[in-house]
Image 1 (tube, rainbow, N blue to C red):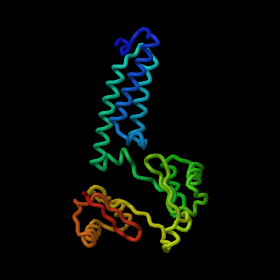
Image 2 (image 1 turned 30 degrees about the vertical axis):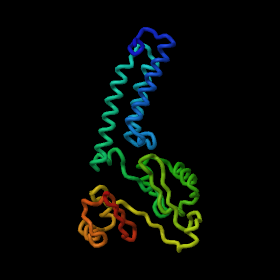
Image 3 (image 1 turned 45 degrees about the vertical axis):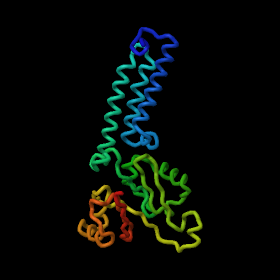
Image 4 (image 1 turned 30 degrees about the horizontal axis):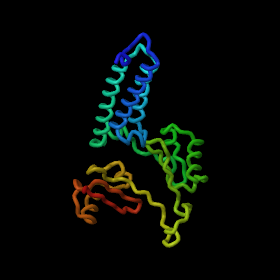
Length: 234
């Protein structure tokens, strides 16, 4: 096992064994971190990916550096990563640090220049992403959101959406974007304020329509017409 420690020189076989051990260790790390870090590279995932890649690269290119220190360091980082993920699931304040809310870049056919600068993207990039979604005209876009995962979600006005069987059989309705008003028993007072409503109004509406308590609600959404939809814990 000398190839795992720092050496003056390594044979071709020892280099190969070091690479194999590193590969298997990274597979193990990826399995522990879960599919989240693979399917969507968000802020926390991006930071941990940069650190792990940089740490493991050095002993694979420098024979004088051993693998022991790198594996210990990566193990500690994985523990910190999992701790951060678990904490973000339980506390919204921490979640907003690791997973910020989507930024509206286009609202009702108009570009939000403030959020465009906040997201640090150019108009050319925005137009490119809109064209990718077959939205060549900004005025056809009801809403475009810059998501935490680094992509843009585009919602066209109903009259510009692709024709489907449901479009032909039902009357066309105006664009409605549902907003999360309650998540895991926690009320989003920022969204509530934008609606011009207060907590008392929301609780009365929940009681009137669904007759449930706040502690029973996993997720609640509301649209522009104040249509409330609630999902309860199983």
